[in-house]
Image (cartoon, rainbow, N blue to C red; front, side, top):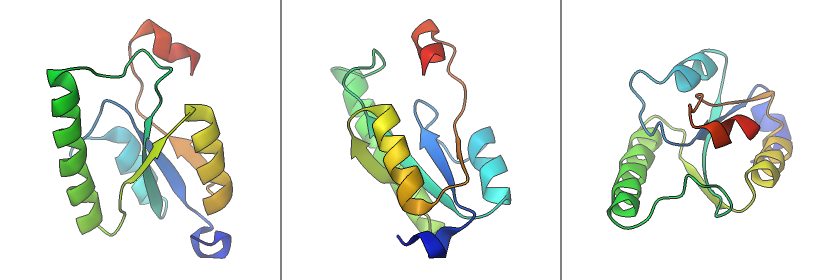
Length: 111
């Protein structure tokens, strides 16, 4: 991904809202230009799933990845510090903005 090729790119950070339909962050960013959809596995965050919930997450991510690929914007999977990963992809893609849907969990407000 070259900076020149994605001048108006928006990064869409997927967290728990793993859907295309009725997704405000995705809808508004896609209207303004190309998107770079990203899912980050950050083991330091309390939102990481375990057991059956992890299986559901895996299946949901596969479905989301298939759906996004069919639109021409493949889902990027990353592992690490959320802030570091987002900064890395913002610089790499020359993204103009990073968008996400709000989570209501108290710990999520610190991100």
